[in-house]
Image (tube, rainbow, N blue to C red; front, top):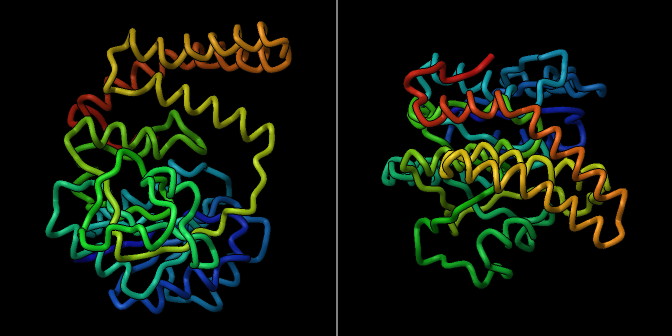
Length: 299
């Protein structure tokens, strides 16, 4: 199984050695592609010097997570890779992780996404976000007697995806620039009959637990949540409009009744922003329901 590891980077330097170093020691051979979104540090020159085997694409601008990944996915399809392993720049894997996931991909083609257990940077505990998805708080609670545990969602820090899946589902949606891409992709994946799961016997570390959530980030997360509901092809369009646009407007009204005028204005602004995306949402929903009738990857 020929695998291309795709990493989207931006000011990658703090994690380069742990991330790329872990791939260098993988017991399963992989090719590595780093797509840089306009880094302002010296990560590009560092990669060229210390990891010359890594293929590097300098986008010279921040294309966002989804659009940059689509470039790598298209290359994987054109160059005959059997799977891609999408991996965050602030993440690293153990030696056996990719090999076991590759074996599971071959034996369980019904899975469109397979992931390892996500650990914190120390490697001693389960990442809090991942814990909320899998409902396992302690490593001792992992169901290690099973090969794969199905879930409804896993964030895209570590995704093993057979390339054939993209031929059925398409790439990441242009609706989402940063955040929300993973939720939208999983919605489409499940719509087209694929499962999502994790292997409880393999691990990756994700260095994100000490990052504070700013007000701006919270509001952006709220926006992309409602946008992903608006675009969700599991819903009829009226239902999607209700869960996406009207639910956001309802939060604005609730904030007024709670005496939070500024927060009400935030949600009202989000509501109008969602409405301005309506034409694009409709076009994307049509493409996502019938991807074989459209380009797999939008420009």
